[in-house]
Length: 168
Image 1: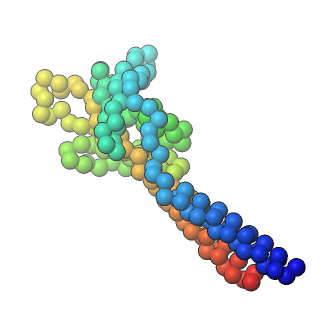
Image 2: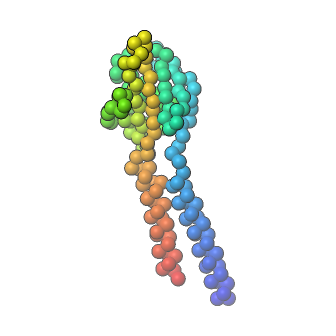
Image 3: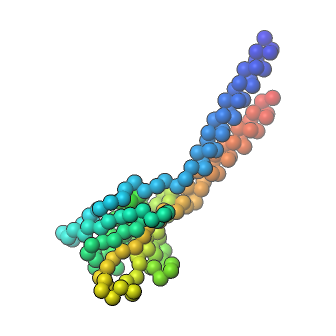
């Protein structure tokens, strides 16, 4: 009878280790890809602004057929692009930070598990297309993503290890 308990204990330990490996491997999954590419419509003040989205490596480029106008409308359009591409309902409609990257003006929009970057490309080198509105968007993991995808599974693994070690 004692042999069966020890044998069952080893099976339970193997099951816990298997579940632990599954949880830890889930933290190694890649960043969620975009939901959509193609043609979209941004509507503002009764006007439609069609734009296209294409995947270019890790980024997604967008190009509007018609420029939405001043910077405030461009930022609303960029937030719409992020919603259309990534489908994350938690994206803030206002940016939290701005910076320049390789002549592009970039704006950071925060969300629950990711930060999103929308960069507007300059039209300096195409004099015939000064009205052009185009750029790229990128999804980056933030601190909450790090905690839920890496630290919590690691803590669970350590806790399970010491719990099982204490049971012996």
